[in-house]
Image (cartoon, rainbow, N blue to C red; front, side, top):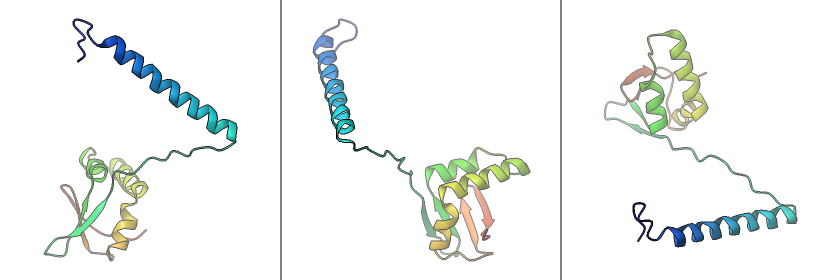
Length: 118
């Protein structure tokens, strides 16, 4: 048990945290000494494309939905920004993989639009 109020259990916790940091540093030093390196890449939060019964392609994914929800898409600059952000996420490629053709309806969050190729 750990209590910030009484301090109970803090010393063992801090000691364990120090051990873990020491182990990580030792592993990093070992890897560097071997001349190897580790590549860290962000893992995309994920995009899922489904189709409604009416044929609309629906883009699911927190980042994609957020890109359209947080922008005033009536503003041309904001619309271009949202489109660029969606493209960087790979939404256009995922729609193409799902079979979307120019003119097909697409919904991302509350936004409905027609699919267009680049």
